[in-house]
Amino acid sequence: MHNGRAMTFHVLTTFPGMFSGFLGETMMKRGIEAGIVHVNLVNIREHATDKHKTTDDTPYGGGPGMVMKVEPIFNVLKALKKAPSSKHQISNERIVLLSPRGKQFTQQIAQEYAKLESLTLICGRYEGVDQRVADHLADEELSIGPYILSGGEVAAMAVMEAVARLVPGFLGNPESLREESFSAKGQRAEARENQRALWAKAQGLGPTEYPQFTKPADFHGWNVPDVLLSGDHAEIERWRKKHSRAV
Image 1 (tube, rainbow, N blue to C red):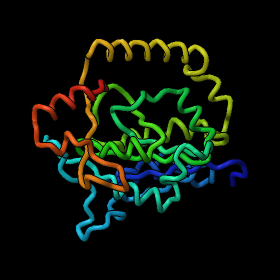
Image 2 (cartoon, helix red, strand yellow):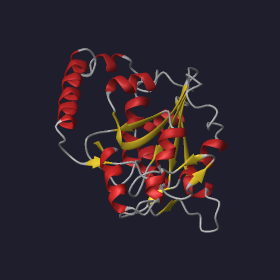
Image 3 (tube, rainbow, N blue to C red):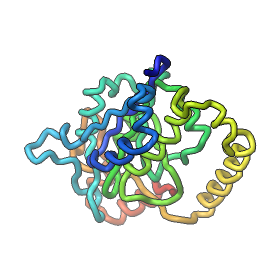
């Protein structure tokens, strides 16, 4: 049994079943059984307040697809005692929204996360997550690469594995980490790759994402921008272009 520091991952998702193989058949299983890491899967749908357990709605300003609502995510974090008063105040915890608009995940970030006691990962779905989650609930947005997935679950698995293997005791032999390419020389290669990604964004290459909002228009005083409620499609389009960000 592991007697050192354990790390807890809280994963907020509408598809908890996606994690069964990852947690039950990989090194994560051994880490969990040894008490080195704990994983708390939370079904966001169970924290929706309407009878249909709705977690998404149509976007304000129009457009295709559905947007994940802020309220159920707020309710989960409140139940975990992580919102909103704890935001940015507890140095050994972090709340991360997995999003194509976020900063790119790197080995250096994995090393920073591995020092935490608790890492909360919010998995987006559909056309995105209501921007008020990023603005008021998450400490930061994180992307695993310059491409778009159907949801944050695959990204959450990548982050968890990269972080967990850096937690003392997870790999068994700490010498294994010293042999890996992302220590020293690998960090320089990582920096070069980040520079290429930043150059691509500066050139306007690749897809872009703009902030999304859905009902309610006012949640705890966090309001949807007036322009998205105006019905003026030309103004809405200008607002979206202004606030678009390359991914």
